Image (tube, rainbow, N blue to C red):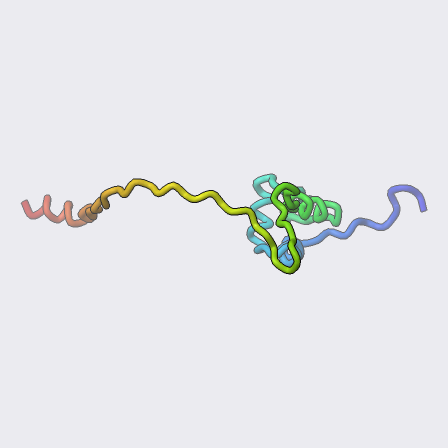
Length: 112
């Protein structure tokens, strides 16, 4: 086959991407709209190629930190002890007061 006349790439809908990564369709469209994930936009709709989907998955991949990996001792996992938190100074509670509604202020001016 001549070059350029092969099979066209499959385009996936935002709903397909959302279902695959466990997010909402709105989230996928919003990330594309803000330019945070790669997309194809034929016309007015967001579509995604298989390569773009793989890139999205790689973008949100989280790799373990080798220095923070738990050490296994038998069947118990040893976890490094977290430093104790320094207690904050107790602050006195601030009492909040509601502002009177604007309508009430208008009615008081009309009555006067």
